[in-house]
Each structure stands twice: as structure tokens, then as C-alpha cells.
Length: 219
Length: 217
Image (tube, rainbow over all chains, first blue to last red; front, side, top):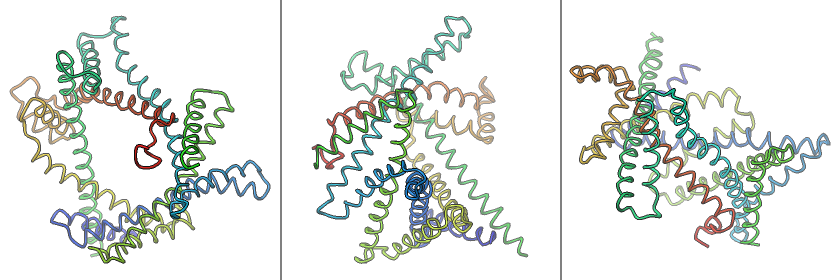
């Protein structure tokens, strides 16, 4: 069964790489199979990691009289069922209820989390080294790095500040911001390329060692 | 009913999430956890609706006999096989794990690795040192890529043997990532966060309502 799995995986890998030549039936087969299996996996996961432990188990406990609090789970179940109103043209407006709840939840959760995880932490990380400058524990190079950091953050933010026209000093500050952004994008690009190449090496390693290795093991 | 109730629900859930996040009281935390669980219960229904829409789209493709309609059956086969094993028998079933490890994971990894070729060819065409900004992007990307792999080190050492920076490409890469790159990312993160917060406030207060009708109602 293990060798069969290796052959299936190798066949599908080669089907997808065949796209490098041009679009063809093998690639389209693998592409559509990937979409279908990912959706099927998503269905199984949302039921077994979402609906069953969070809704069905507590509700069943309430039905058999173990914990009446489980009946509260009927509320989100009913909210979720409203999604299917989309399938009826007469009642499709009801779908706005669960959407409004999810959007309200997401917006409400976003505000404190963004403050805590991004704004406070990132600002603290930017200005924290200046506390060490006062204590005299930073070298000249580290002071330069701390100043570079704050200059980069301020200039990048200025580039995204559209409430003032980018003229005079603001124009020059935003130009420095563009330079920092280009370095950021260059780093992101370099890291992305290396990540993809690492995946490519892993797939080629699979084809050479596991798949061709399984052929030589047969003889 | 059609407009006011969703706006009130959005406001209530948004305000409750903000208040419970800032209050460490046990009752407040239990309300917070309950609402988080509610949304996790609601999501699978949205997933089912999304699957129904996908099935409708592919079924229409088959009925209309549009181009490559035969492959819609492959989509159905993939959904049915994974769901028929995963839903009744669970995700720990050997057959489900076999399909996941030998079909889905290799295809996902190969799809992403395919991008290595396209990203490289796109870079070859787009990377031209036309001005200062483009040169910065090009040089940074080259240093980060070379600093990541031993062969990059080797090339750098050969090319830069005459300079005091030979044997320093890994350090240069790390310095770029830790300083100018991080400051740019911090600027972007701060900008996105401030924009996200202002948009969230607009949604909770009912100023931004486009999610109700698809237009700026």
C-alpha cells in the first residue's frame, strides 16, 4: 500500500509539472482533483473539528438530560441554518443575519487584538532600544540601527499618509519611505522564491529517492 | 427587519466582543468564549453553502457542456471520496489519512513549488535596475536569496573576494531582514492595523453597510 501511495503521489506530481510544458489534460485532471479533495477535506474538518465537538456533543448532552445548558447551542445552529435561506429567492434576505453576526464578531475581535498584537507591540519594539541608549548599554552601531528603525517606520507611515499632499518635506520623507518599502518587498520576494525553491527541491527529492527508489527496490 | 435587525446584531456582537476582551472578569470571559464557540459553530454552515454553490457551478458547466466540462466530474469525485470517508468515519480513519498524505499533500506541495518557475521567469522579465527604487528591490532580493543557500555563499565569496565584505553575505542578509526590512514591515503593519481598526469601527457603528447589499447602501 505504501508503494502504491508513492506511485499515486508521483503520478499526480508529474501531472502538475506537465503544466510547465503547456496546459494539458493531465494537469487539468490533477488541478480539478486537488480542488475537489481540498473541498472534501474542508467539509470533514469543519464537521469533526467544529460542528460535532462544539454544537452536537453539548446538544446531545442536553437531550439526554446530562447538561441542560447545551440547549443554548440551538441558537448558533439556527443562526447557521439561516445561511441556507440563500437557496430560496423569497427568503434570501435572511442570509444577512448570520453575515452581520460574523462581521460584527470579526470587527469587534479585531479592534482589541490589533491594538494589542500590532500597534502596541510594534511601537514598543520600535522605541524600546532608546531606553537602552539612556542606560548606556548600546554600542554606536546599535544606536545607528535603532535610529534607522524609527526613521524607516516614520517614513513608511508617511508614504501611506494621504491626508496631506505629498509636497515639500513630506514628499522627501515619503521618498525615503519608498526606499524602505522596496527593501522590504525585495526581502519578501527573496524569501518567497527560496520557500518555493525549497518545496521544489523536496518534490524532486521525492521523485528521485522515493519514487525511482521504489522502482529499483522492485528488481 | 431586512436592514435594521442585521445592523443591530452587528453592533451588539461587535460591542460585546470589545467589552469582553478588555474585561478580565470570569463572567465576561465565559461570554467571550461562548461567542467564539458560536461563530465556530456557524462557520460549518457557511462552508456547506459554499460547497453547494461550487456544486451548482460545476453542475451548470456539465449541463451547458462548456469547455473542459468533463473535469467537473473529477471535482465531484474528489469531494465525494473525501467527504464519504471523512464525515462518517472521522479524520483519523486510515483511508482518509492515506488519501490526505498520498494525494492531497503531494498535490498541494507541487502546486506551490510550481510557482518557483513562474516567479523566477517573472523576476527575469520584471527585474531591471531602471531607477534607484528598482535597484534597491533587485539588490535586496539577490542578497536575501544568496544568503539563504550555501551556493549563494560560494558565489558571493568568489565575486566579492577583493572586498572587505567577502564571506559576509549571510550576515548582510540577516542585517537587512532585521533592520530596514523590519522597519518597512512595521510601517506596513501599523498602517494596516490603523486602517483595520477604523474600518471595524465604521462597520460596528453601521456607517459601512456594503456587506448587507453588495453596494454602499
